[in-house]
Image (cartoon, rainbow, N blue to C red; front, side, top):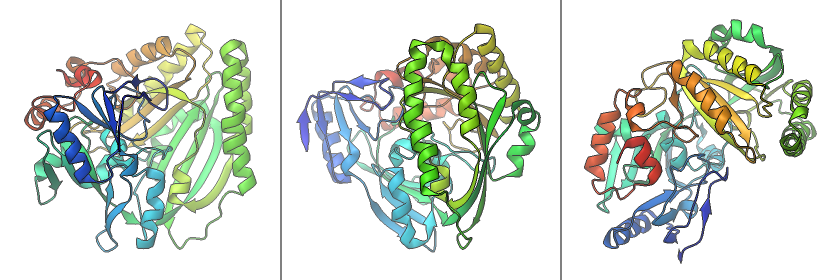
Amino acid sequence: MTRLGGSWQNWARSASVDPVRVERPRTPEGVQRAVQAATAQNLPIKPVGAGHSFTGIAVAPGVLLDLSDMQGLVAADAGTGRATFLAGTRLHRIPALLAPFGLAMENLGDIDRQSIAGAVSTGTHGTGLRFGGLATQVVGAVMITAAGEFLRVNEQENAEMLPAIALGLGSLGILVEVTLRCVPAFVMHAIDEPAPLDDVLATLHDRAQAIDHFEFYWFPHTDVALTKRQERMPESTRRRPLPAVGRWVDETLLSNTVYRAVCGASRAVPAITPRFNRLAVRLTGDREYTDRSHTVFTQRRAVRFREMEYALPAENVVPAFRAVRELIARRGWRIEFPVEVRFAAADDLWMSTAYGRATGYIAVHRYWRVDPTEYFNAVEEIMLEHGGRPHWGKLHTLDAERLRERYPRFDDFRALRDRLDPERRFHNRHLGRVLGD
């Protein structure tokens, strides 16, 4: 279906556009026709998934391709663990699609509303020092190039392009199929518990090494870290899920309904923020359960926010975190959203934030109705001083010149972009800033 005009905005309401027209292809061939038509009319064209990037990376001023109707499993093989999905498939649908084959995604982030193509293309990640981001699970892809042709990339065809296309920022072509290396289905034993923040920082490296998946949240104006430890276990392990009522109280009533009200109130009266943060630490983050992997990995997030996240060499996480904590205290800010710390293994994807180094992530957030600029800019300077690379789907101020210094394969990626999209058919203003025109 094609419709003229109309507005598009992302989930965080931080990016919007009025495209020339919107198309909703249902097949890869439909995407191909849309690219060919856009080329004939000299219009830029870009796909959008679920709109969960905070930046303008998906903004489509010409032809906006809404891939919502391109969802589903193309093929799966329990023996090889390979599964191919249409590019618009939402992450939260994948577990049910893989279940008949006894498979699961190796790792997930804590939000599963994104499309698979959007998630891998922007470097979405979970946590765990032995596990890479979602793009490291990509072993093949089918893409429509700027020339309107199908390009297959996998271990046998155009294999040299895979480290670029697996995390391509939407700048190399339009993904229509994504093939993942999956793992046998598994459950996880999860322990969420508060711990003294100083103790967690003093032992952070050991904690991250000791468990499959470790992360923690810190509400500013408190001295407590809300830790999350998750251990992978065989699928046959007896599940002990959270009681339905308890989960609803924790994740819907407290973490969303009440929290949304408090964020709104703290915007008008910032002085209540420290007291609420201390209350939140007492009411949440203390539970133990065992459940299917995707249920443990993900949470429902209904309160809109804006986010900046930087990837640091793992050994720099603690000094950078301490600097952020000191910054908030020194400026006297009242910050209503927690700071989040996660980890990932080193990988070899050209534009991955974890390229070539074990990585720790520090993410900061603000309620979407609050201007985050002053806070984010000050935190960003700390991250840059500690060797940080910004998450591609989250807010930052860096341009191509500064990003080149942080990515050893930056110019190789740009050269492939010149080859695949010499006329910048998939270009927009944001990509012009981060990759150069």
